Length: 300
Image 1 (spheres, rainbow, N blue to C red):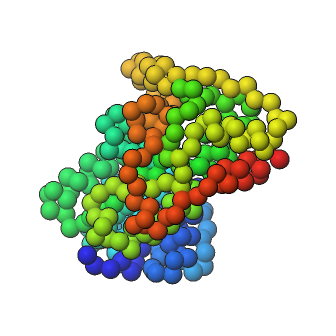
Image 2 (image 1 turned 30 degrees about the vertical axis):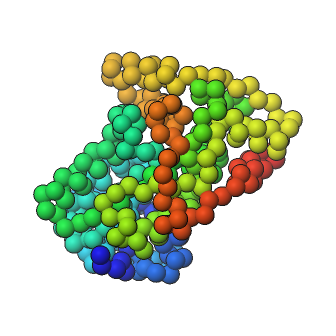
């Protein structure tokens, strides 16, 4: 495989994009270009070249991708489906490797891949792989990392700390893979430095495995006077309710998000990864200190 010198990052101003961009820049290994949406007011380091492009136009994005060896997409949920434009643009521009925005659950798991919340990512996967089968000269890597432990706690996604009434799924003992945003950036750098080993496959990373019960236990240790009133729910009930709403055409954000909890905590959905690429990509893992320190910032 050729060496990657020039890297374009799409969606670089988001919660994940910013740390991924920082990791790529700080590695000192690549010439970095940010491809930002036309009309965006996001600002970036003066050391980074910024190109504005129309994300809906293959021609516009291809012009921005010209001369790039790799494209890393970190767009958020609203931009996932539109990544087919990035794929076509990357092919047109002669890009060697594309990392579409996945960065979550194991989409190779049969149950998880069927959850409606992941439909846009699955569609992008299918688009890439069909293009390659048809002869497109490009390769891909999918990065699956489980839950974002730092962001997930801060946003109350993994445990609702603001109201103190967190939903605990399936008893709260289910272990799941989790990672910090910074480690995702490190993994992306690792992929770009190991093209042969990561060619046309999914890589799995994590900093730790934990559970909702353990996260709550650490929170109680950090802030012993805080009142907690857990609400215990079953992922099977959540999925049934969401499926019924989807069947009625009630496609709301809460309904879609509920599927994320099913995929993360539900039995058989592969929330805890069985195999890892940590060693290959330079990740050494992290201790529960990450959880404790995050709680200290949020609860004290």
